[in-house]
Amino acid sequence: MFEVSDIREWRGHDVIDADGHKIGTMESVYVDTVTDQPAFATVTVGLPTRHRLVFVPLDGATVGPGYLKVTYSRKAVKGSPSMGTDDVLAAEDEPALFAHYKLTHQPGSGGERRLARR
Image (cartoon, rainbow, N blue to C red):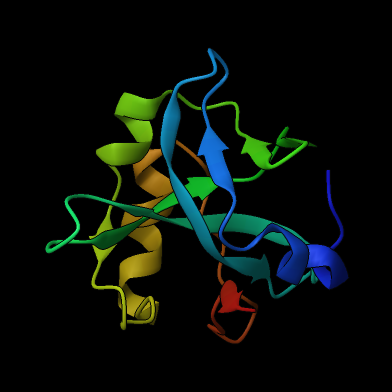
């Protein structure tokens, strides 16, 4: 796994699934606001004139020369909640993102956001 401080090095690299299929290009990372550790990556997918960003959890992700390998299938990632390339994940959309991957969404004790973009 890579450290948050290294994220600039991985932006623009390929994101591949466990079978080596390219999903898209790494755009940004959302960190868990409780631990400040990488939680999700946004991946640019779609046709050149219709790009969108999809989310993929980073649990179990590894890096190689020029790529980030995630543990989720390309189909699961491309079917995840998405947003425009200039958008930011809205707080009210966080629960659906966690639910898509069957992950537990637990906001902060005061209802704070769980994810923050880096």
